[in-house]
Length: 354
Image (tube, rainbow, N blue to C red):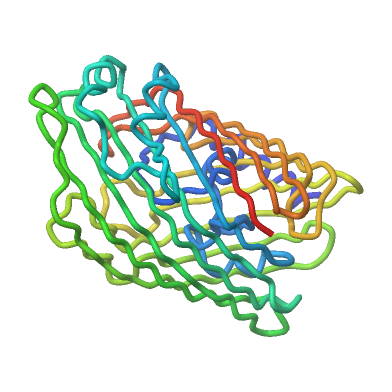
């Protein structure tokens, strides 16, 4: 009980922590709803985006033959989102960017933002002691107005990542190894002139090294540490190369009959070349009717994304064969010395497979 009280106290404290966030590719819809935590708590198809060692948290196995995330900031409607993010060809993601006909209405919003990704996911538990494997192949596009909409920014990524978790010392400690490849195109233009045109793509690779320490007992506490993009993920002349960063996290996994409770807290950027350091994320998941793949039929989530409230819900049918989820959150748009809250962002997620 002391461990539970301490972790919940940290989570409450995170609601008043200063926020210094930056754009992270391939964020998990589950993690976003939980304050964008995941270093110790991730257990879904996007675990590799947070720590390869948490593949040990995966239960069972699943393959998403199709997975889609679509999100937009407050004020952008279906007629803004669908024509610019959705394609009629598989994987149904429009990678050409913002249409010129949508530029005026998009820039008429405060700090406008749209993001979508689509592709394939795989995760599997090999042994109960913690051998797990996972892989993602997803395409993602982001469109944003910057500097009070004086500039228009677009980014198109093709992300491939894979990893394995390896138990040590009877599974109490787990080592995680991950690799990531990003093929990126990005462009920025004067928003008053027109939509920026994508140039040639740049490709970079980097590896992740993660650790988790797991306790037994009723609380099932997990402590995680990860070095992401070791040596830096160099993307040539593109604007947003991914630097090496070290993150720390703590979570618990409590099963109370038909109820599952997962509180989590992350401290991001404890080592980073960015100006945004020691970023605090915290959240909790309440699951009803847990299933054999680590999820629940119904999950409700809430959190603090560096001081900004997050929330979400999920319906998980047939052990992740069909998932419908959503989240609401705010992002930090400050430069590391000042705070600037984004408008409300809302996302929906859908995946189908077996």
